[in-house]
Image (cartoon, rainbow, N blue to C red; front, side, top):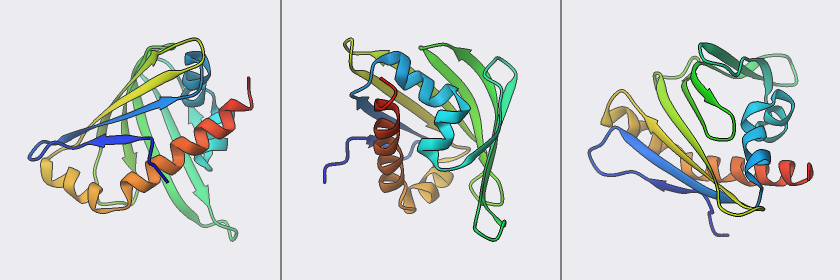
Length: 155
């Protein structure tokens, strides 16, 4: 199966660029990142906090069937421009990856299609390489596929 989400990781750099074109209008794609109820559905996690504003923040958490936390992440929102861009930090708690800086750009392609461009900046090229050793490409493709499935039902 073709992976629709493309990852460009230039050798020796500490950032990468993720691009995905969605069969979704711009407003629905943006809502997938801005509305807690939608984020929970496509990410499969609980949104404990999502303050979409400059100097806002967010916190996500997933628990297993016994109530143990198996994933938690948080960050600060530095810029929030509806249907255009979100600039935020991302920190996966209890993981060795450190804090990332994420620039999310949303672009309309037509009335029914849109593009997401994410630039993720890591503390170092080595930190980025550690992240890429994981099934990162598979995971983000799976998440974006799920996003498109969930959000297309909102039309």
